[in-house]
Length: 82
Image (cartoon, rainbow, N blue to C red; front, side):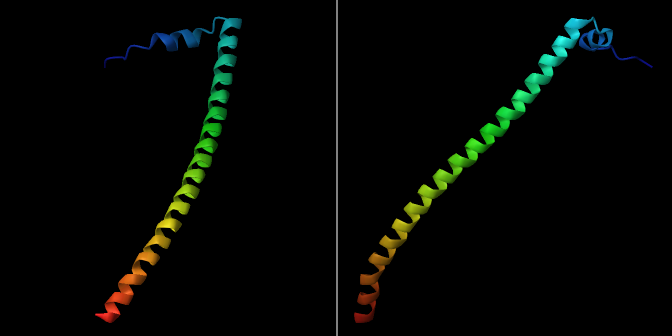
């Protein structure tokens, strides 16, 4: 059987060179935490933006419904007279 060549990055991780490795791990964990925090912030901002758009669309739909009712009244009157 052929053995797979091991990734050089994995070889470096297995050696654990010392305090610099611990610093890299700490920085990596902090970056992961900041990414998750920023993801949550972005998600809540997208939700707020969608809510604003939905409210604006609701107002437009109310206006269009009112116009439809106004324009249908003459049509109904004319259909009874014909």
